[in-house]
Image 1 (cartoon, rainbow, N blue to C red):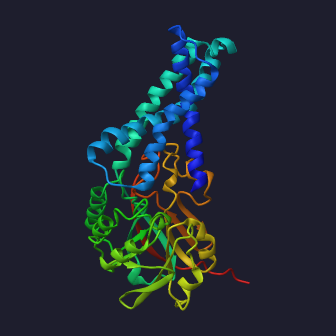
Image 2: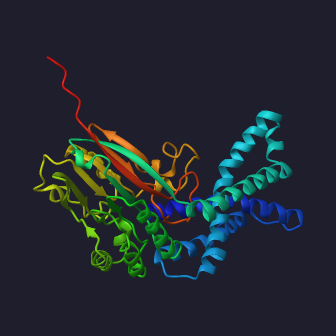
Image 3: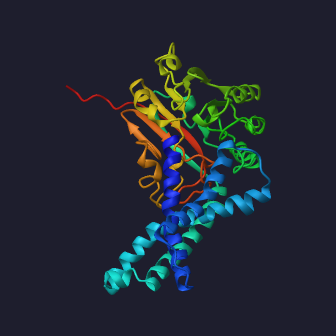
Length: 390
């Protein structure tokens, strides 16, 4: 977490340097000459509000809807625009250089550099408005079919709604979670799987989170595991409230799902990031003849779970990076810098992993190229391939 915060601060300052350069050159045109050190000081000053915004997110205290919309989201529209302006400016400069072949001095001259950066900042601003104010509010319902070897006929077509990474807090109000719950209930699924990070930090929103999730409805019940953010502060109140609301919290343990005589094993492992994972305990005593389905917040456990015979693993945690190349989000996203299994479906032998992009956001409240998602996992009966004749 500390390394991610350092990276965010560094990127924020770097993204504001071109804007500080515009201010410096603008002041020069007015006859005010600023030293080079003022450039860095200006960038730091422009980036300072990010620190206040981030502290709000980490402390996660309730704020009014007016402040969230008119202060917090507007700031992050600007922040995202500065972040996007840098790569857009590089691409624009390359295009300009290839088309007009200017000298380096002409390319870096005041009118040209200002026009390029200003245009890129405005383009970034349009994308940022979409990513902060629109995209993260529009939820997709995506159906993923998963063939499961040994699955009984009674479970063929069995539907599991997966919700992950709600991050209810100051920037993602409980009303959003209530809306997502209503959407899931309208789907009338067989089971609901919650794969962690229901809040962002602290305990202030625990009551609201449990109240919203307690309204989930499914034929065979609602099952949940904890995520790393659920332990930022004190996880015990949330665990108690969630279980009191009727949700089956799986902490390194498993249960059996039964339908018309057919059975599946559903296991849940505790959070890996905070070193609470115990796969051995979660699978101890399970019936090896039953297909194994696993809920885990962090997809890094997939390799070991696949080796232990898991047919399906459902995870979250990555948010698909929140920033990705549109239409190519599964391959090109920020999470790929630090996570091998970062987005969508993966197979390893007879095991399949699905990593949800989640519903909320953490850190900067923005999604570009990715989307909030309610995933409907539909199980399909599948038999292992026949061995070749010898």
